[in-house]
Amino acid sequence: MEQTLSIIKPDAVKKNVTGQIISRFEQNDLRIVAMKRIQLSKAEAEGFYYVHKERPFFESLTTFMSEGPIVVMVLEGEDAIAKNRALMGATNPANAESGTIRKDFADDIERNAVHGSDSAESAAFEILYFFSGMEIR
Ligand code: ADP
Ligand code: MG
Image (tube, rainbow, N blue to C red; front, side):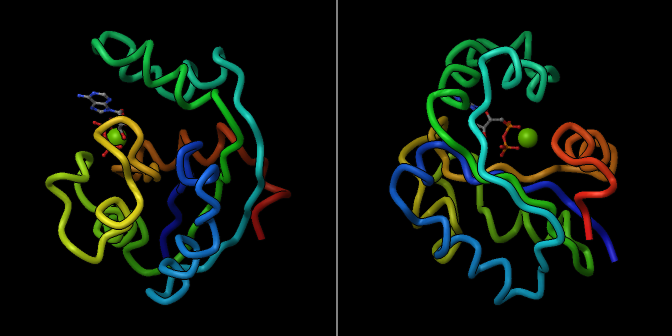
């Protein structure tokens, strides 16, 4: 069993497709073991995405991620990190395979509906960024 962090980003929350996205996780044997709906401040979005701080899209990305509410989840299952990434599809929805979350719900490379941890190290950091041990059951 492995845990990963998933975020339904402001674009997808605004479209009211939270339930449709969560269904895909459950249909693929990922279990929600923690979940909350919050709105990040700009500084909180910057802290979450600090690994990208030198990238040209950092300013725009962190403005987008703080523009409205998000739904943050810890998903648990076998190979949860890789499985979630496969369900998400490519960063740019134009390159995402059919049937993936980003193909079906994302607008463009920035407003791409979901975030998922990309490694065990990032999952550990990202889960702790949002949840305390007592909130994960
Ligand atoms: P992923 O979310 O697929 O792991 P990255 O970690 O490379 O992708 O990037 C983090 C987020 O930054 C992306 O999900 C997307 O919202 C945004 N992003 C990535 N590349 C670009 C880009 N070239 N222009 C605008 N936004 C981008
Ligand atoms: Mg990433």
